[in-house]
Image 1 (cartoon, rainbow, N blue to C red):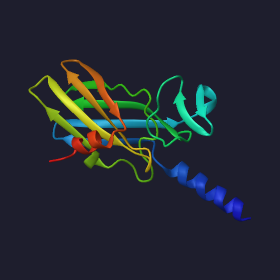
Image 2 (image 1 turned 120 degrees about the vertical axis):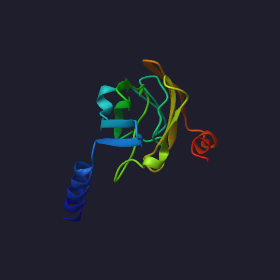
Image 3 (image 1 turned 90 degrees about the horizontal axis):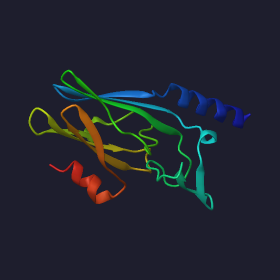
Image 4 (image 1 turned 120 degrees about the horizontal axis):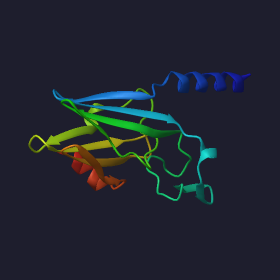
Length: 157
């Protein structure tokens, strides 16, 4: 009976978690992030013992060696009237629980057509950060890292 209650609790908890978040970066910018449930049957998973080391022949960010529960499915940055679909490959478990903490997202404007977005994601254990360069009508992810020194530097004053 205890197992039944635990299964019910975990299914309600995971069902009630939102799968999209919106972060207001400043008066002119917002970031909308979507995640979807990760289905390992649709991917090539490489293991070292019980430790997941890659998904689809690429490094993964967002876990400490276990299979991810979620995959980042979309990140849309809006600056004024312009919209940018950000590169999100290899990004898993972007948040857990009550959602994203807006303190872990920062946009830096260098004029009207050059911006840098810095973000930190975490499932509680598998923290990582990403940085995107937004220039004119395009964007590219320049950095994705698990390096704690780089992550800390993103949000120093």
